[in-house]
Amino acid sequence: ARRQGVPVCTIGSSDAERHSVAEQAFALMLALAKQIVPAHNALAEGEWALPRLRGSLTELSGKTLGVVGLGMIGREVARRAAAFGMTVVYSSRTPAGPEVEESLGARRLPLEELLGVSDYVSLHAPLNDSTRHLLDAGRLALLKPTAFVVNTARGALIDQEALADALHDGRIAGAGLDVYDPEPPGADLRLLRAPNVVLSPHAGGVTREAVVRIALAAVQNVTDHLDGKPPRDIVN
Image 1: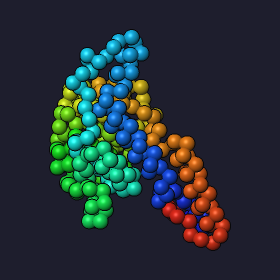
Image 2: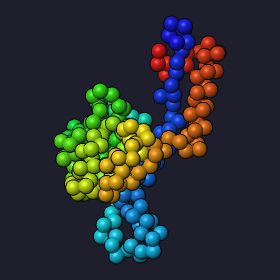
Image 3: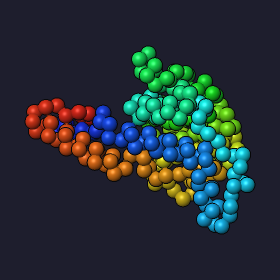
Image 4: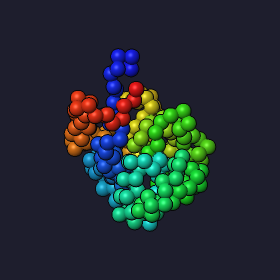
């Protein structure tokens, strides 16, 4: 395409998915905190699960949310966390800047420190050589035993075997996952059968509204090119 002078574009800087993915992260957090999946399964099988669940349910209010990657989606997650009364800390390669931090009520920490203080960790970093298995066995060991991990970014940000070990051993409280490595995951992936997981099939960015925004962003790139304007997010 480059040799032929054909621009290849993504919709990377559009806001097509930021709201839907941020909401997916909170859906997973709430499902974990309120034990929605085991409660539903128990009721569907005829069990009144309240006695078993009493004491294991928890709240988001007053908890610390660690946002790993404070890009467009990470910032939307931080904004929603404020509405839930959560304390927000974040880790990123570069600081967001004092104005952004003040508007979000977020404080930057080194990743290892963030993992140690967070009750919920939500991943929103890009996947590259430096972030592959960003949460490995060593970093997962830094989490509180009451902490939850949520990943709506890319599956390979987490060492999935290490996460399965931590869940099976009860070293962390649970995980909410919308992404896997590879996709779709194989049926033999231990993580799919780990205790206290909430799983969704990379559905965060495919709401009805997001799909329309994605299509419109692609059309805008085409019309900009035909009008002689530079399209956004040319990758070649």
